[in-house]
Image 1 (cartoon, rainbow, N blue to C red):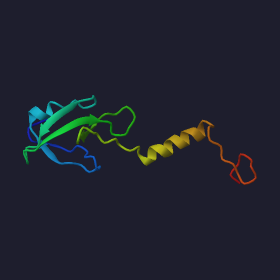
Image 2 (image 1 turned 30 degrees about the vertical axis):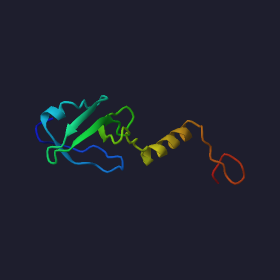
Image 3 (image 1 turned 90 degrees about the vertical axis):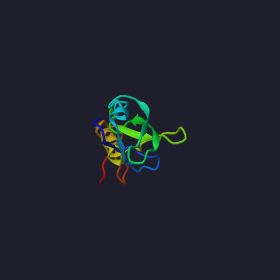
Image 4 (image 1 turned 60 degrees about the horizontal axis):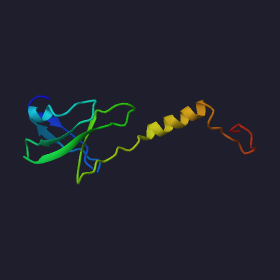
Length: 107
């Protein structure tokens, strides 16, 4: 991360914090792997405890969160992922649509 790099970790309320970090703080972050660091916002001088986090995609670890009172926020499962999981169950035959007559048809 270059000197003066913008950094936008997720706050516990879901909003993004906007910070400007120096190269030393940027080097503490390991994109794609678990990490934890205390960084200083160059604009305000405030120190923040931050950690790497999953973005919501399977196997991806590219996001960051601000830790407040020792607690991390947990990302909510994106709505489209719920729909995709339901569609997969239907394709695998785990979910059957039943019509009014009780048969396996929606008519």
